Image 1 (tube, rainbow, N blue to C red):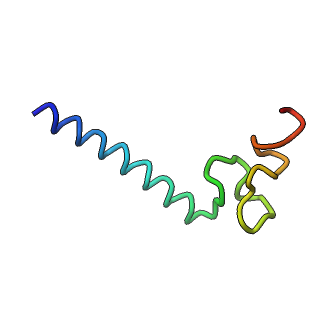
Image 2 (cartoon, rainbow, N blue to C red; image 1 turned 120 degrees about the horizontal axis):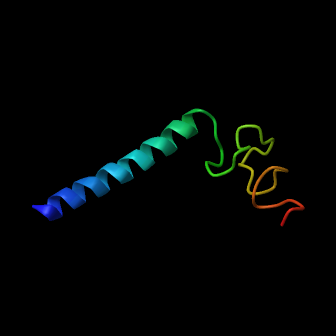
Length: 60
């Protein structure tokens, strides 16, 4: 019985993560992890090249 409960909890967590990703994509986010993904000028996503992305910048 506890195995079923654990599996159900994991399914709920994975389902919530997938729903979040789908919702953000519909809102126009190109790169979900980037806080500036909606304002990036790059067509294919920021790829860390935006000035505010964590993938690049002088702070690294």
